[in-house]
Amino acid sequence: MKSLLRMMHYVKKHRWSLLLAFICLLAGTAFQLVIPRMLGEGIDTVLGAGNQLLLIYLGIGIVIASALRGLAAYGNRFISQVVSQRISYDIRNDLYDHLQRLSFAYHDKAQTGQLMSRGTVDIEAVRMFLSEGLLHIIQTVLLITLIAYLLIAMNWQLALLTLMFMPPIIWRTVVVSNKLRPIWLKVQQLIASMGVILQESLAGVRVVKAFSSQKDENAAFSSGANNLYATQISAARLQAFNMPLMLFLLSLPTGIILWYGGQQVIAGNLTIGEITQFILYLGMLTMPIRRLGFLAAMFSRSESAGQRILEIFDTQSPVKEKPDAIMLNRVDGQVAFNDVSFSYDSKDDILSNITFSVQPGQTVALVGGSGSGKSTIISLISRFYDVTGGSITIDNVDVRDVTLDSLRQNVGIAQQDVFLFSATIRDNIAYGKPDAGMEEIIAAARAAQIHDFILSLPEGYDTWVGERGTTLSGGERQRLVIARTLLMNPRILILDDSTSSVDAETEHLIRQALDGLIKGRTTFVITHRLPIIRNADIILVLQDGKIVEQGKHNELMSRQGIYYKTYTSQLTASGESLKDGEEG
Image (tube, rainbow, N blue to C red; front, side, top):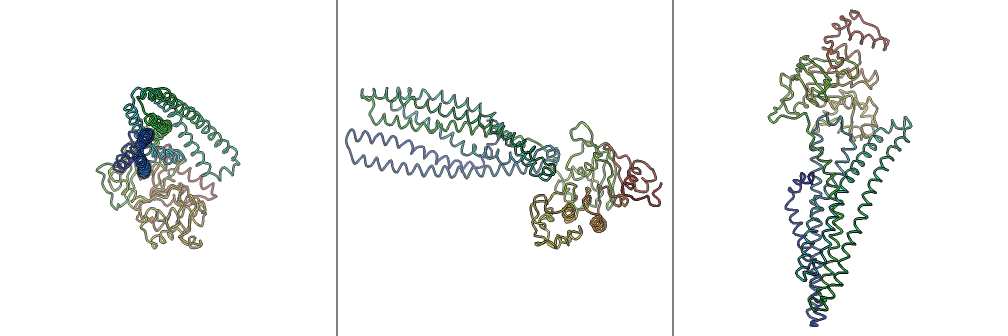
């Protein structure tokens, strides 16, 4: 129960509500146990003294006890459901908050379908046990204990003969629980794996259809479904065999009661009412015994689910905010990399000995092939990852010494991976600044050259954007992301190939707007667009995670090194030629 015990603090938060549910459970159990006693007394009254008035009172008492038992059961059921929903609410919010706090390093490897499964199916399994399961276990133990006491009090010999079957039933329950736990863990993992397949195939449905891979995707999903089916059937087979076995073991004492109890009645040691109570109490044991099997399965499943949830909670983000982190107020925009190295796995360096300094208002162009380290550099500025060597400072303050929120409020990013939410255009632009007024939103849209397009839509800024912005073109999505970034009015601006999916005319319009907005901001640009590179204040040429050249355009062209070759090859590809002063 290690994983469930670790999650008991969620139960403790609602201990008073659970106490009330427990009181209702005790009351319901008490009224439940009173009914057979009253019924036995009634039988002895009728067969013995023939006191009809007492029989009426006993009948009324049974009706009242049944009504009170139902009322208590309602209170127990309702309160435990409320508590269980609160528990799942707390776990789900904490899990979501923890996932949001984990760095890019975790999300680079995590599968969305797996995380979704743990945040839904696994939490529901834990919820069921931490609320209903715990109370049912208490009620089951309570019923078995009290019924055993009442039977022993009436006739200890008959009680021992009746209860001798309890130890093997309990032993069988433990055995089944141990067998079910790994099965349910596999079920949870298979459900999550199918979620991954489903999420990827739906997110990439255009690629699937473009390559006519529906059959392959169906086969992959069908294979997962078959494995899940086979695993669940094995669990069902075990449960299906276990339940009748326990009921059979429980039915054996009935024959003993009739045989030995009948002899006791004939000998005058028991009354007919008392042997009736024995049979009724034995029947009352049927429900908790049947529940043992159900609880064993619930426990096994919730233990497996809790283990999967705690794997996320136990994952610590390498990017941590210091307890004494300071607020980074409005910065000037001076950025310096001081002998920075970085590695994703602490083995192979992605960046090595990166050193450069950028003054406020300067524009930096990052140039290099795929995997050269361009995107990693800009990710380190916002501290999506932490450097493994050296330091990064903004206005001479190490980024590791400031709060993450204040750092990222000063750094605006238009990422290469354009992402829009299923919301209105207005909400998507204002995502980084939810309290922005309509005038500010329109100004940002105008700056990104998207305002006129938005007005052409039937609902304007209230137009709903489909999932990931699929209702918009690539250029429209990129301009919305640029507007979102510009609305934050950051002092440091990062444009990660943000104009790569727009046509020449749109790019020209965006560049006109950005030329005015870049003034006074420190701007980092990852791009292959020659005009942007040529006008940068600093050009960093990266290769294999190192800066091999840096300087201004004319300086680098005169050296006729890697930058010169890259630049001229792009000119050749675009059909342009070197301008005056670029020949070196």
